Image (tube, rainbow, N blue to C red; front, side, top):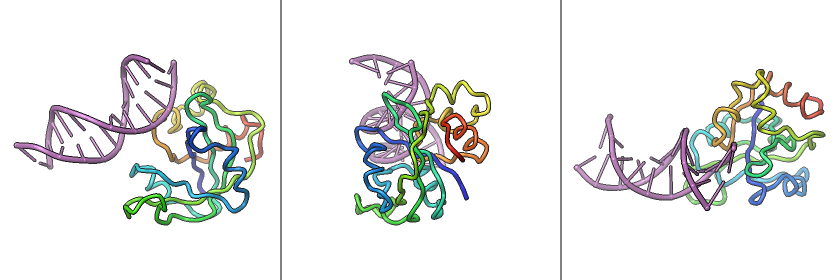
Length: 139
DNA sequence: GCCAACGTTGGC
DNA sequence: GCCAACGTTGGC
């Protein structure tokens, strides 16, 4: 089991929209970055991820689960781009902001802290546990 | 709204 | 294959 972080602008695709899709889940489409795509290719069904809102909120707001492995992105004919499907698992009790991550030395190496532009990021098991603790949820 | 950082593109 | 130019992203 591996852990990830999915970043989205809330006015493009928000946590609420993700929740509304229920267990059917939704394609994480529109990614046009090789690093992010490679991360998605590495995902397995059942992997967990954080759902992060960029821009104004800059906070982790929920937990998602991979429910379909990488497949061609339906929003493009370019076969270089693939995406996975994810479904909402549960919201956080306390949103974990970017600032909180930056302030915690245990998260100093987190990709979110060091390369906030990457839209699909790996999260280590240790980082997962720390963030879940801050969020007030079970890992 | 600005600007820095990063990734991609295309000319050579 | 290198590198300059450009576009996009996202924090501030």
